[in-house]
Image (cartoon, rainbow, N blue to C red; front, side, top):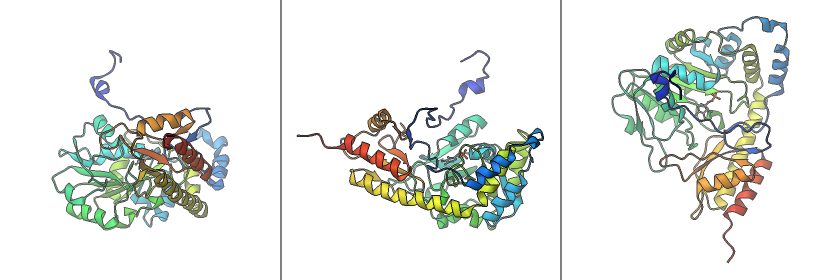
Length: 357
Ligand SMILES: *Cc1c(COP(=O)(O)O)cnc(C)c1O
């Protein structure tokens, strides 16, 4: 608090990211990072970037990255926007496309950064309740609005919305922008990029933080009609001409050039997810079907999610608990390496064991 804060800053409710312990050795299953490192080709590209050319500004348009990302999704570079992590891309999306007279619609349970951007940009929004099984029902969005945003697969539930439902949503709302945040799509969702050429109101947001193991590099993308992208570029060029440094541009471009590595770690995460889901179910958890690199799980009767998260933390295992309506009984657990998952299951076995009679 300071008397120098503007009223606007005073009224903000900033996002609180998951804990990033510095130096301490923990099993980190709380922020959905990839448990394996990035492609060796990415590391080679980063090393090759460390030379005297750093005295120059980077390419303001990140052209090689846009080309690689466009090709990977069957699109043109003019249909691609690149930013400093998808959080920054989302900020520009809210500012450029979702700041409308009518309220923005979003699920009641979704990425909790969306309401933060609404606060930052003064955007009115309404939440639409997911059904009792945490599924998005397209019919519930049949009301006037200034835009729609949701994560697909959703976070923190992990549940994927079928492409046919997104198509129905786009067709029902031709005059507002519909944003699909696909941070986790590579782990089992269907990308809406396939619909971009048919719907000029669709914007798809992706990140290299999860499935490409590059959370530390900060690279996010948006895909959509060239006119939507041009709107994002207007905001970006009114804010920061160089959001991606040379390392980010070169490293991210190299990531798209190693599909074999990408498929390998994705498949390992998916196998690990299914094994962990089975183990948690065996321990009495209810586990939602996940199309992501995390599981959303509710401990069995007699065990409290918040207390379990705290007890795991004591043992050096971090998972995420959200103290929010409808989900305060649940834990979001990132799929780690098989060894990390085994350590988690062993700890939960001890914590959830029935008390000796
Ligand atoms: C992780 C995540 C992001 C942010 O990703 P960055 O590119 O690392 O900023 C955006 N949306 C959702 C739903 C996420 O889970």
